[in-house]
Image (cartoon, rainbow, N blue to C red; front, side):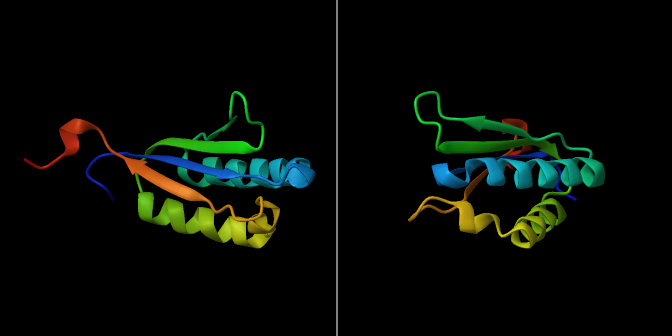
Length: 102
């Protein structure tokens, strides 16, 4: 377990032609993650760019298992095949400032 909850921000470009399939698959992944880790994810899109998507998962108490489970679930759906050409999922992880060692 991490000493402080981790917040995941994951962004990528989706291929517009596959957006509906990708969203359906992602909703299933997010539901499974919520059941297993009690973390409710959010899906956002760019204000002026509907192909730019971001997943937000906040207050993840077991980030290593959470991320491994998410990666497996996404692989099972072949989610990467719906990304825009040249795009990849990019994950940023953040913790509260108080969690930093001084």
